[in-house]
Amino acid sequence: MGFGALALVPNSAAAFNFGFVRAPDYLDPYFIILLVAAVPFWLAVAITKPKNVPFNKLYRTKMDFLPQFYFRILQVIILGTIALLFVGMGLARMAEATGG
Image (cartoon, rainbow, N blue to C red; front, side, top):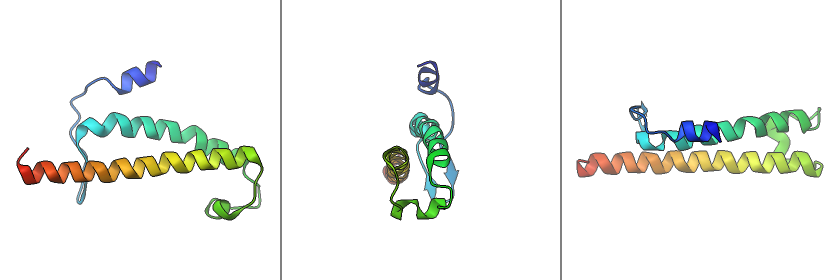
């Protein structure tokens, strides 16, 4: 609760700009929250996955319920981060085109 409240406090951070990847600064708290949410699930996947299976083969591996659950939740978080990144890029370009 404390970290979520801290992450959503308005700040004066500028929008990140890595060439073609730009996003508005008001999306920063959401990226932080998704990153913080992904870390424990990544660790859970790393701990519970079968030892002889590398990470890039997990999506095709038959696993028990718990590692499969952690892996699917991690996939949803990563897809949400990518979707938010593309939405942010679109919003940044729209603001540039409209002079906002």
